[in-house]
Image (cartoon, rainbow, N blue to C red; front, side, top):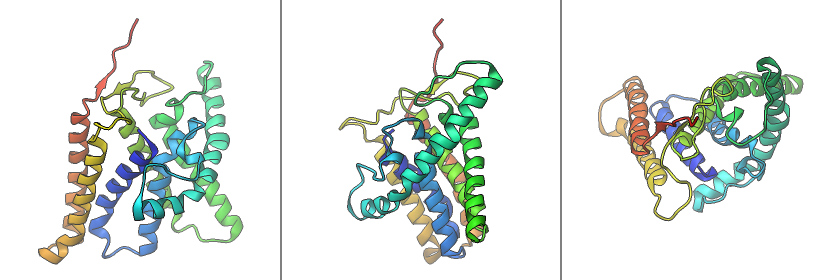
Amino acid sequence: MRGDQHVSLSLATAGLLIAPWAPVLDPALIAVLLFGTFIGSLAPDADAVDAAIFNGRIGGIKGKKGQVLNGLAVVLPIFGYTIRYLIYYPLSLIFSLLLRKSYRHRHRGLLHSFAGVGLTSLILGGYLGLILTWLGEPLVLLPAFGCAFFVGCVLHLVEDSCTPAGIAWLYPFSRQRVAGRIRAEGDFEVRPTAFAIVLAAAAAGMLIAPFLITTSPEELGRLALVGTPVIWLLFVLVSRVRRERRHR
């Protein structure tokens, strides 16, 4: 998918999960969670030289939303080049040596696998921890950023699983790919936009629910935890995601 689609879908999902707790969470924590998801939603594309994470700007997003996100996007190249040169390349070399296989750097390879994004999240968190410690800053919000970053990465993988190119979730241990029928380009492909609107509407519903009915953040939180995977499952089904047949 395109960078703007990754950002919209991932932030809408994060918003749905955070919304029930918004009245009781520290605003700084909410900001860190959304920022971590934002960076994570684009991080796996650090294996492509023309990715949005290197540009400092996200095309396709307009209006107030575009102004806010592109204001934050100025830091994207810092994360992009850090991930590409200080995480992705070293991990590729390590896996190549461990598995005794030659590794060809390509888009939707290691960084588009569960192992890749998991290790990237841990290593990036370590780098940030070292920097914050050197600066004398507290690390209290670093775990929240790390978790949100990982969630953003996983959502990116789910989103790319819905496209014809697909991804191999277990790469480099398996090259079996899953793919769907969502095409990032095209005037008639409205499913990503429609799905983002559904997620955003659900998040808005969570925000206004306490003003309309008697409920608690815990009850709404449980509903969001159940409802979010259900909504995503419907999107995956609509995208006709299937395991690709391997040609002999």
